[in-house]
Image (cartoon, rainbow, N blue to C red; front, side, top):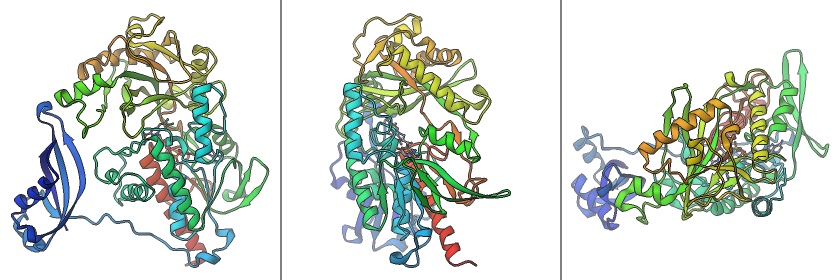
Length: 545
Ligand code: FAD
């Protein structure tokens, strides 16, 4: 198979143009072209009046050898690399694999689901324990909170089947190094579970929230059909750790109900919001380090402002969809402000998992057809900003979320302010042309006391700077809502080269909560890596030496 890169075609090209471009580039006849597929499609919008698609194509031809020779100096015609996934292990006998070796996965977010899927596919029949409800019931609770303000601390935007990313834009891109092509495996499994096949080739794929719900249910059924088991409303309260001097070995978990479940392989995929679980791990002496994360607000603009700036006269083109952006500004006080988790045509959502706290985040439907664009505008902070215990960053998050709850009127409304008023340092009294989408509602106020002074100063400096890149970004009526605190985990539960906790054998910290992922795709990739490590470790025990 040959890989052709940098194949450029106009936005409105007919389907046949792809084949024509291949024949022209390779100078072969239609009879010599066996088949082709799109590996990647992005667009180049540097010239707004002439936006073009840029394709990477995989081509099967009867002339492969000859063409490789002929194009050997052309970097845009190469042999297609093998990106197929290969299992690293297989359980000796699926039907009789002993219960003592049955691995436990704590958490059914993207990390836990992919860890569970891979273990099941390799024949290790994992048990997946999830504190929240199955995704359908969880959706009822979460949407109920957003519409009526009735909050359930075990079933919400963070907790429940599907994890934190379930009610999201479902963006599936990541900057992690992925030498073993695990990301491709994640995308392929999403397609097997019902995602649109285009996620395999579009440059910045997204799934959209309603579709994600169905996909999560389908993945659960696949895992169950392979011998895996899910238990919902099963919060892990403690990990059983046996200590012999310096050596510590996991022996099982205890649920909030008091039930003990033995296992020597426990994958900890609890996400960045499992604060009670972090406290329990810290108390039990599991090695934890503080880690940088970011704090800030959500910002909402009319999507048309973003489209116009990014796509010019092609704004609204159905193939391009709603435009996105990625912004960063390095401030005079040494802080960096950047846009985070941008949701084109989406809505701002209430993402708390604790009573009496307010947290913002964003989501979109697949169509991204909402009126507003939103993103987090956040400031990077480091453990120097929250010295002390490894959990001090988490405590800072809690304090900021409590302050937001107070500023929002103590009924789960988000405190909000117009960008014009925020820059002019005056409270907002009435909304302007942008209707904020956060539910149960937005309580206008002065946001300047909602974050530390350095963060407020940095955001005040960054917004006008962003306006130079996207005209209208600092428009008076754009709405800020707060607070955005759960950008990533405030801790890292460090692990060794075998993916086990530094000081607790058999505990496999994984995904975003452990500080090893940031986003759905990277959490899925990490789940696969950790499942591989668990499988190999179990096999070592079965066949020592
Ligand atoms: P999580 O998804 O947080 O899953 C952890 C699971 O563990 C949860 O289901 C939780 O209930 C469970 N759990 C916790 N403690 C326990 C316990 N003690 N016992 C049993 N179960 C427990 N990322 C993207 O890449 N693209 C996006 O578009 C995107 N949008 C987002 C929108 C929103 C509203 C939110 C909140 C997040 C979004 N993210 C997005 C981030 C993404 O969701 C996370 O990076 C990802 O879900 C992390 O996966 P995870 O499996 O590591 O953890």
